[in-house]
Length: 252
Length: 167
Ligand SMILES: [Zn+2]
Image (cartoon, rainbow over all chains, first blue to last red):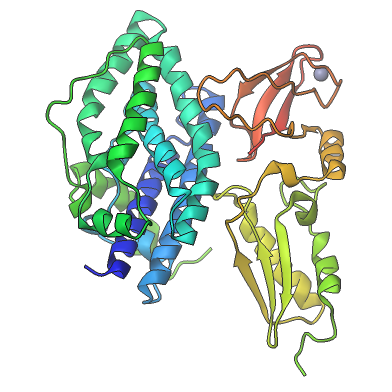
């Protein structure tokens, strides 16, 4: 594998995870449990889609075939997306969304902290920029997790169940292949084993505050690296891409 | 001779510096710190800007405004360059801009209070009510009417208000 191909793939991983999680958050628009949360969740969506734009634009530039951020977001098929399996999990109830966002934001937070020192200037700048936004996302979801986990017995049981259900998608966040190997040597990517240690610490701290128990690492789902997805991604992109597919030359 | 040569870099900066933020029209792209650089090359003018938030919808409007403002001065070949580093921070906002925000009803960022600890840090900063100047205010939501604002409420005059949050 050449460095160029590895770098394109790496940018797609970052960009796609933001894009898909952003699309999930956008699905909350007008469906939030209270007005403040509706606004908060659509703000999260906006940040995530902004982060996706930077990385997809960059991936298109490196590729050099004239594909824009929009081409990459709206004209790829399901098996061409490299987002994390966790990002595509359905919103479920508010507690499901809070748990998913917490686990994912903690991942982004520690990943971007490390990528600030990437030898690739664009990735380093992107990480330094995104960390400011992701810090708010992590705090937002962690505060809700504590509020719900340490709330009533019903809210506690519900988020514990969300956590148990989502746990099997967390192993995929930290899987690596030859792309990582090559880019770590170049100082561009970071070793996800070390991100996992930081992530574990954050997750354990917050779960303890939230009086929730950390599920056992039993069977873990896998697929991100090979663009293998759950049945949910196809439905998500069908909706996300509808306009571009129905009216291929549509512009704002 | 190139088409841009009758303007200096400073003049072009001057044309652009007054472009208002579409969402907070009392402050300009210069005061916000979004306008970073003007460069004149042989065949074009390169304007460097940096986004406040990655997903800020105002950025596209800034670009359109820059292009149309320069066009009105007869400058046709304009390139907008978006840079991400150094990452935009509210610390770049001038005192004048902060005062304008306050008068407009938005509490300006409390400088240097970007939280170092991510989680559950004792959020001790005092955000004064832009209406009655009371320090007795409370955070309602970290996310407000636009990406850059949080929602507060004053416990004295009871008015809700936007706080331009620190990043
Ligand atoms: Zn007041």
